[in-house]
Every structure is written in C-alpha cells, then in structure tokens.
Image 1 (cartoon, rainbow, N blue to C red):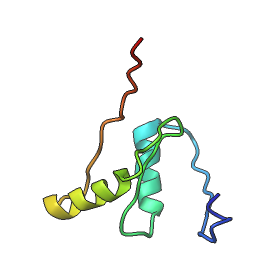
Image 2 (image 1 turned 60 degrees about the horizontal axis):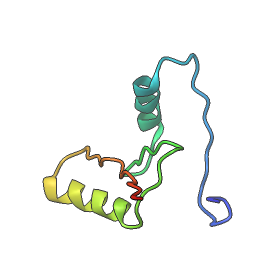
Image 3 (image 1 turned 90 degrees about the vertical axis):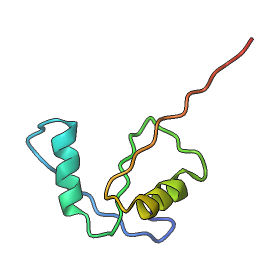
Image 4 (image 1 turned 30 degrees about the horizontal axis):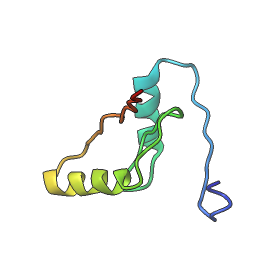
Length: 76
C-alpha cells in the first residue's frame, strides 16, 4: 500500500531475535524521520489517532506517547 502511494519503503533484517522491546529499539535506531509509529499488525487505529498522538507529543514536549487500544463492546 505504501509503495502504491509513492512512499519510501525500506525492509531491514535484524537477527538474532531478542524480543519485542529490543527489536523496536533497533528499528528506532534505524529511523531517519522525526517521528516513529510502532503499530502491531493486529491493531486498528481510529481515523484521528495519529494526529492526536502527534499533538500530544507537541503539547507535552515529551519524546514518547502511547494510546490504549480501543475495545469493541457488543451488546445483545
């Protein structure tokens, strides 16, 4: 999808596997953008979530922000 939108995509391999936190630290070290979003493949964001995260970084003047995963509640 990103390539279809003419966005740069770069794949990197990082071995050996040492856990999620270490892998994310490696990816953060590889990043050249001013902001990085780590999003698990089983998480769907609300349409305005990225904008709210960016706004929070600016308002809080902090280098890391996160958001809880919304939960779908089905009522019968």
